Length: 609
Image (cartoon, rainbow, N blue to C red; front, side, top):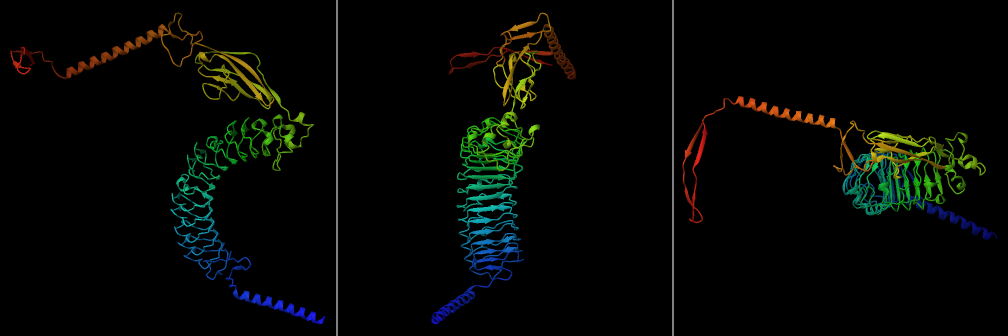
């Protein structure tokens, strides 16, 4: 028994000795940690962050894989400064004051994967700085003072997949700046001082999948700005307060699945540029001053699933706004000026899964009745819609209504036109006719006017529907006569009222006018009230016109004679003496090869003396 205990004791002491020897040996092989830095031998990490270093230390352990030199005062990176770190995978030089990088500054870092140079003072990146980085995949040069990208700036980074270059002062990107970036998948750029999208430079990035463009410095996105980026799937344009419009073909050639244009100055949804994006799934137009979503204009984007319009100025979403979007699952219109959202705006409300409708001045009436039965299947993001404009429901959540309350709370009153008496408006040709249509209802009905041909009249043109519900006919013509129809409608129904218009032709100012029937044909003229085009002339008017014409003629002739008289006087006395001389002459000439004779007759000559 005692022998077993002794053996066990010897084994324990042997294990302790071997452990001590191994620790001693390992401590001898590990290089010392540089002063003012912190080392982690297990992770092979060297952390020199916040050490007030003015340059990169010389005594760095060669087996370091992670090197953190952030928040120091390093001003320059000299040539081949890191060649003693062949195992380095991650190098972070952010938050320094680096203004100069020499050519081949990173030569020797053949295994480096990540390089961060954010928040320094770089103005220019010389060609050859990134030589010797065959495995680099991420480069962060954001928040510097870079002005230009010259040709072949990144040509050695053949494995690079991600570049972040935001918050710089770029004014020019050379056509060959991105040459060699055959593996680049994601690019983040600022364009605040660029005059246009660097289209030619982008043609070098045939494999690009995601492009983030921030702070564009121009008002219009030009046609074919992103041509030859056929593999691009995500385009993000943000914080561009000057961007107001997108040219019709600005997105032509792209096969995007995700498009974000937010925090810009778009006043309307860019329907035409969006037309070719048939593969689009995600669309974000948040924080733009967009006021309306019109009906039936999203129909070409059949695959669209998400639409974000947060913090815009939306006043209305029209019926059939999302018609044709059979896969539409998410709509976020939080923080707008919407008073309602009708079920008729959607292709199918059954497909909808997420609805952001909070922070809108909603009127809780029958137009929102469709939301309540689907509240168990809809995700409101923790912010259910709240009644705002209805006095008796103000502050209540739409989802709190019980089934018993719904019939008496979420109600609408159909429209009713107040002036129901038959109207007949008469006006002289060339004058303005106004037809009134006043309607009431809850919600307030919209008023539409139809022409005698039952065509909807627009708010512009000679015959236009005014916002107050009236119809104005300017410079009325006989062909404008007919029965116009006023239609008042809201979610509860509609009401209509016909109004008759009769336009009288020009009244005659003479008892016996002179009339010409069928003498002239005008291509744009329409038949008159009686079916014939009558052109009426007043005799008195004809006499006045003829008199004025004769007086003008005689005045012109008199002026001409007076002018000739004074001109002749200025030339002196006119000569009256003349001499007439008789010149007999006979000439015989041969013609036709000497055959036949020709005799020239005598002639008179006269000369004034």
